Length: 343
Image 1 (spheres, rainbow, N blue to C red):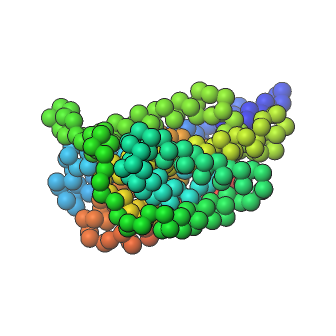
Image 2 (spheres, helix red, strand yellow):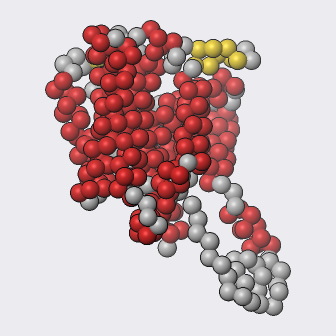
Image 3 (cartoon, rainbow, N blue to C red):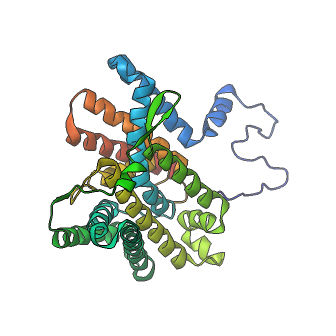
């Protein structure tokens, strides 16, 4: 959300290119203005295309429709795990409990499905995800603890709960119905596509509509931009924050169930890769780590960029450690750039 400041009569708007003498904007200023109007997700998409071409030059079989579908499928799973993080970042927070919310919901779902049935287990796992997020929100909004401390503590607490309550280190019995709507493939124009990809795109559209076309979505941006202004405008800041974290937890739990359906297994450390990955996808997609800006579309594009990075890491056989190192560098670079911009 942006604030509009009206110019005083007779003055010119800063950066408009019209000086007191009616000078025309210089070509460099004009091009700068045009470039500044390009959405951040657009720049991220450009980076993805460049990386995709580079991958094709290094290994030609990556520069194919099958290669694009493979990267998009990886990105879809990361995007689903990052949608909750997007909500938390937009409201000026962060949710570092995403990894073990994913593990808890996935292990809980598979454990409960054996005794309660698939649908009750699904609802119970989603409810626990929402409750975990709500507790995060209550601590941040009511007790005033910082989101980083609160959610990293919750992540550690959940890891202990996972180790204590799920005795088996790995569960592999997944309901057939869940696999049918996640890992099963359908044919489109002669290409095989996993159902997880359209699920990620559908979630992206629905959540983007929630952010863009509802009062709660717009208030989330206002709280992230300036909590003080939101209070002056009469917004229930605490309730907005709690609801935001609850939705973040619900989406993380959904991600855990979708991931377990796609990979057909769940184990205690299954969410670890989404700690850095979810934050990186959000900031690469154009969200401000300081709050007030972000989109689900940008997060999906950010996940595409990271998916292509992961593909290149695999091509050079560099391993998960180097991949996490690259993700960390990307986050630091983007945050540093946003910090300079904010100044």
